[in-house]
Image 1 (cartoon, helix red, strand yellow):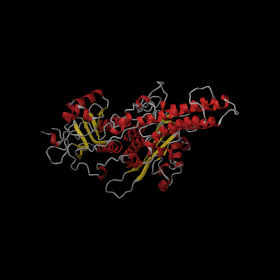
Image 2: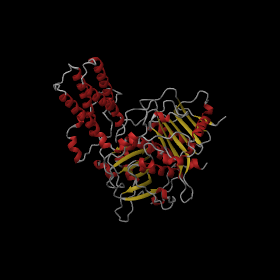
Image 3: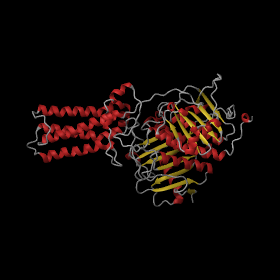
Image 4: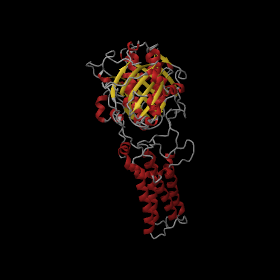
Length: 300
Length: 295
């Protein structure tokens, strides 16, 4: 059974490589909408360029999303009532005809009011629903195939750090040349009961339909709601409550399996980035690793 | 003579910078406001949805026409008609107070309708249907410092490619450890020859002091970003992300700025929070990359 090789000191322990909790809004941690506020100007000494202005409108809308979505409805509704009230108070008959200048002005204003109301209703109808994060049920692990060169290790770890920081990724497995060269993040707990993570059986994975279809198509496969897919059984190393999975082929010899903790949590932007990162990873691994030697454990 | 490595921008990796294929991540759905549509609903929202608000989401079917701007066009049109009605439809002697009140209300509504698409841009889940276009007066270049190793070349080439491909960027500049790579559509002064391109970029960078930048800066609007001579003509958004050298574990070193990633776009508000997160992650690749820092 292909078991990979536990890290066991072949790669020095790096505190920075500890699994970090993905923050809910990485953008807030890294920068704000109009970054480089005046308080940070001292840290940018030597920089002689202009400073960005704070975007008050953007901040206000972002912080009051629900209220802004309903605003056109209130504005349009109030205007509609105001037009009718104006007509009533002025003693004009409440009929919709365009024979007088007053009526024409009223009709145009009513048209604008209705436009605003409809826009507000559209904004409300397409409000994205916040889907809650599901904490993976498993253990955290960090397994790296020991015969992988340092340059590949650095690349793999950068991929993991990026995915875990920017997306909803909580598990990453990289299988290449019939070896699991990286298993990091959350994994299913082994039934043995020793708090170990379930190891990736690369051979069995490669015989499964998920892998075969991904390699055959050469394109990324996004299982947005993993619970709906019967092929889930081919990924026993992932936590049982993994919500979404991306299968990214790495050329013709490997695959990256990215598990997320939110249903439909990977955006189209994430998918585009993962596709190109996969190509780079394939190129890096292929260039630096000619043939992965069998691990000691594999010599049966 | 400067050591400039000018690469043919048409070979190497495929770049789809020519619209409408650029960038690669755009959705083609036509809705009044583009947003990520969630299928599952909480019970509290279901009642609201049962009012069948979805019938309000329509499309005129005009290719290239963004329906989210429809309120703005209606505001312009109806506002103009109101003014026309005031001056042509009646004379000043017969204009009543009621009509004046209606016209003031109508013009206020028109102004609000014109503002609606701008507010909608900042709502959660809103994605712009605009695409970055190539402004006139720019030329496509791909230059890199000459004294870089093959591995460094690959990293720089790939990074600029992915930034141009996956974001609304039209021009990318990466400076790390003294090495420079510029790619995309830039406005190069005529007096600057291809051999002196790198020197020109270096001079511009020194003039602004970009290498001293420790925090990222983002100019989402054109009036802020059109100030630098080095930027392509028609730049409307600018993002500069510092590359910070991560100290080795166990060392007493502090984080040091090793360079930056500069991205210019021809559309305003070009970079979403997600884009900025990915760009920061890419910058970290160079910060932790010993290929550049051990030079």
